[in-house]
Length: 275
Image (cartoon, rainbow, N blue to C red; front, side, top):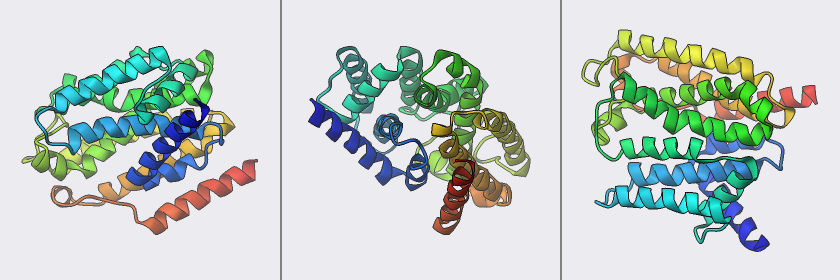
């Protein structure tokens, strides 16, 4: 079983590194004993995303529901023949990640099965399930303490929400034209303009500011890694802010590899300075 456990966590690491170089970089700043668990959370989330975003078969909902059942069953038994699910289940059992966070995540993923326009209520529910709960799962790992978890819960939720909203902004063309999704309730893809963009950005800036207060108080084992991801998304938001709305409707905004490397170095040196 130990060998299978190791293989499962390595599989989760591979999925994470292949799908997100930026997130993988920040994971390097976590304490070594935390990294496998963050990989496990990200990998399961990524597999669910893959079902609803990339796979175009008629059985997407069936596959997503099956993944949810597999996950919950594995948490109960401590075992799955799917290595990604197995790693997540072990992490969930160790850090008390339960249905309170897992169920909303899969509910949000199901919202993506059918193209829709989101009103405010659906938007908030989707943000919570697709992003805030993922931040809270990670917070369970960061703290492994109920008192600390409650202390940082609001900030972790705000951070997840900010990241998701920034992703929505930079992916609006692919989401709207490619997948038939429009998440923001204050406008439509056709009417998206500077006014709408700036209103969304103000909302995101509030989330990032709220999250920053919590990040500064996180344990040393996780603070620098989370700070790096926060800095990365701040930079991404600044690029979006300086890009006209009309251009956002046609191209995806990115941070180049050099800038990513500089952010990593800056945050790593901060870590060394405070060590």
